[in-house]
Length: 264
Length: 202
Image 1 (cartoon, rainbow over the protein chains, first blue to last red):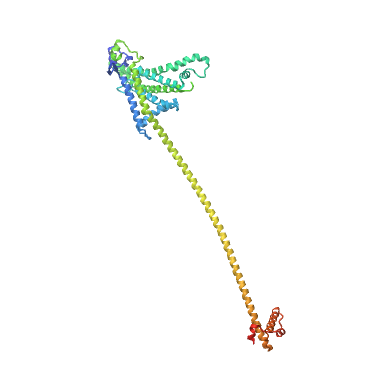
Image 2 (cartoon, rainbow over the protein chains, first blue to last red; image 1 turned 30 degrees about the vertical axis):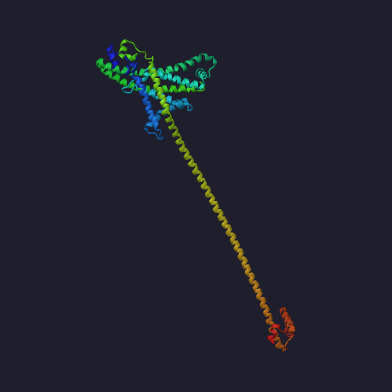
């Protein structure tokens, strides 16, 4: 492994840092090097679409296994994120976005655990920024379309039920939190979770290897223990990956719902 | 920049890419891929699922509605049959009542007819008897007259040839006979023969 090599070359054990996320290109198209996370984007999109296309195509009244699985997965997002949060009146037009978002993020996160891939796509900050930026555009566009620009700004920044004396204080605060910070936190939450989880896994794995190779008897015991920890952390990471995908889609639904609301 | 270098070189040179700074190619790529996925979902996945859900709901609701309709129909039919049954019962009772009434009427009529007939027969018999009695009386009267005349003629030895007188005597005699005043002298004094029997007596 590159990291291991670099660690060995340095003096003592060198903990994995941000550099482990800068993978060399797998191949190049012209001047653009195509890296593994880029390929993962395509793979995730193909997997998600392939599964749901196959499941949705049959459209039988009594679903088979594949259709049932697809319907359950889609129904989970549809009912818990769409209908319950956005409301039964408006949610249907957001379903393609929400369903695609949840499963796209989910699969990309799970790539961190899937053998031979083992790299979380959204530990590349740019990809998280892309989805967060898109969600910012989506919920603001939805709000502006429904309330008009000023109506929407009023909705998002002027809290109802608060005396006007507080407005000079609250309006900038609300503006900042609702229109500026949201995409940043959205992106950073996803990115940082994936980033940290992967670093943890690499740390335990390479650390275990280093202990085993360089620390004699103690290392022979501590190294495998580190690997056991790596496995435990791996399971924890699966939970985090699912949870982050859910939170990402959930917050998107809540932002849309807030932009559609009639009152703040 | 990392695309042209290796990690090892990055690590050794200490020239680390800040992980928070995006690679713009990745931003664009993620956007494009995700938007394509959304479009594909909108075209092929969500409509299909929603249609299936809707059809299933319709099918279930339709089934329930059909069952309800069937139930209502069955109820209506049952009520109709009940109504018809009670109607038939009423009809039967009415017919029975009618028949009873008619029977009574017929019996009464027959009875009346029979009574009339009987009366008629009785009346007829009576009149016939009367007629016969009259005839008998008449013939008896004539015969008695003739007998008496004959007898008187013989007894008196006198031929009463005058018919008018004869009949007058006979009439008187009979009248007396009827009123119960007949005596031997009376009979002897005024006896004559009827015109019919006068020849026989002679």
